[in-house]
Image 1 (cartoon, rainbow, N blue to C red):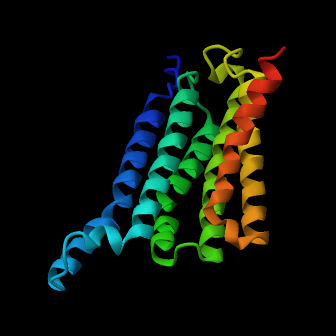
Image 2 (cartoon, rainbow, N blue to C red):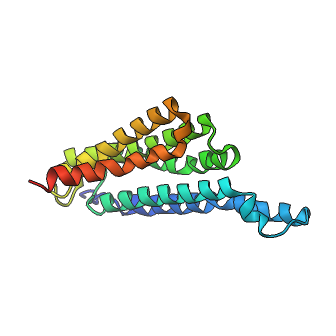
Image 3 (cartoon, helix red, strand yellow):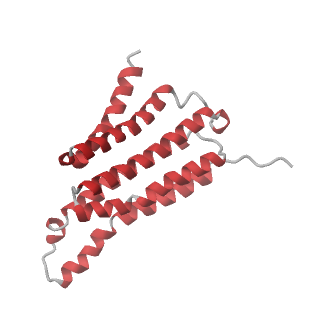
Length: 201
């Protein structure tokens, strides 16, 4: 009997579940803050005024995880099968997603503190690096894809460029601590450069 084809469907379902749990965990520190306010007989508005960094970190990580999930989802739309390397890389990507609520809570507690900023950016870089590795893996293994032309040079350039932008963001935040999380705006550069380079031809 011939072996059944290894479809990537289960990888996608499992990945979606982990992402959904990680997104849910992000809001728990804000939920836990409510009973504390009640016990201290403080007004409900203090949830906002006294938890600004917690709210910022929640929104930042929600956007980061949501954006990475969209990239992951878009990539796996073109993946028809998998091998051991893809499974392990995907697990590594999920590890970084599952870990992100931890630096998120550190951000809520310590704000713009240098170590916290670098730890956060480093975690996002690890997540991006895993996704970039998956992109390069499937591009080099045509048997894993429906159509090898889908992951084109612009896609690869953008994926690698985002990883490089995060290295630059980490270095900028390390050398100029006052920049803090604003260094993440460098992530807007690679897509712009990719469009300018490939679509102008």
